[in-house]
Length: 86
Image (cartoon, rainbow, N blue to C red; front, side, top):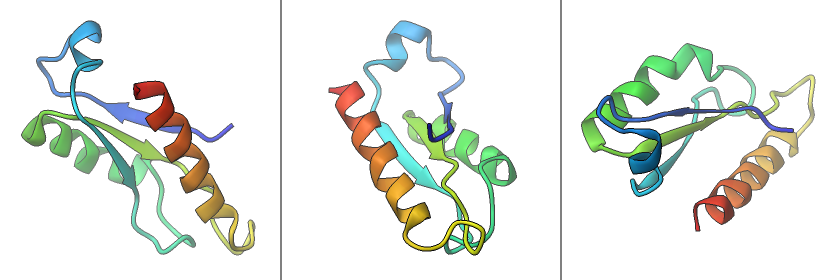
């Protein structure tokens, strides 16, 4: 399971959020540093300014998880979120 945290615009209800655009957000850090928690404010800001649901993926980091673990997490989370939104 890959942890994903989603931020919605302030005025979105649970039902209206299903109709909003989806943005997949991958925190900075080049697959070796960073976290969703560290950039949650940015994800919330983007959601409110753009009017979209911003889903931030907590991919595994190197060197504890060698390449391509983080990239695999990003692709798997993308496929799951996109297929769920369709």
